Length: 419
Image (cartoon, rainbow, N blue to C red; front, side):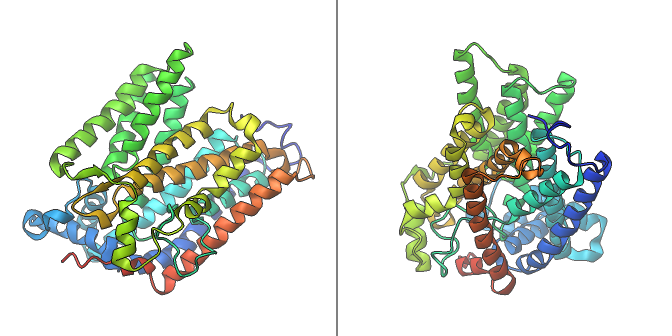
């Protein structure tokens, strides 16, 4: 529901200022926050170092000779972009190109998230509302599971929300949240514009989403199919051309092609096998207290949904996001690759689905409380304060996670000595 003038009547700043100033500040803050941590992780062997090694091998035409089969992955968008930037500016080197590509996607992610707030909550008509959007974006890019109760373990056993060591999950995020939003609009039959142009845009975003990392493609396809079947039973069909032609078919074809080149014969149903392998290999408590860790991973979306249950159950996009997280969590906890269980590649499905759920829960929370956030209504309800308090715990945990990366990079302990 868009924010109207009555909702934000106390905000008198021009609408242009309300958009331009917060976006400019957002870009500055994203740069100040993520350039330092990116400068650290881009020099680490896992995963940036490995991906840059892939990019150099692809550029030199020696990929098949240099890269062990066990390390080969079917998604190489990051590598292709690094090669392209390196060819345009060879002086930066592969590491410099890798840094610039990742930095560009941090900016892109921030802008996509801000755009989603504008689209789903409403165009800010005052500076205060625009600043709230910008701060919300920064928070969403920093939050992690609430790890304050396990200070010596900030990752294993939780479902991550924001990790810094993986360039591929970074590239996936803006495409995933955009594709979720577009899917929701198609299912709700509110995606307007020239139909064939929209179809072309959907195909492009779908292809880039899977080429960045297939983790969200395998989540989104069953989500939109289940949701469309439910709508059909209620005699409210979506736009099948856009849904199938723009999302399901391109993602399905991309995933099929990747499966043929990558192989899925080692994929097996192995409940909790990844967490057991992490516990054994890294001497961690990855498989301990999984239910509390799961709850602390999803606490903010869970509290938002429960405290706003009457409206949440009637609002399509939170339910669609929860359905997506259900599939992502199932892949995380139930599936594994038998020949490389410790890689935990299926856990990325849960991570990206949880990130999308956090984004949609924040948007829903802001939409339900927009009068409070715009200072139109001074009283703050217990539900509002509870959600804000839980989000603060996620943010504090995220700040701890961020600070640790600046000093020692905990994921380095996961080096698999692959070569």
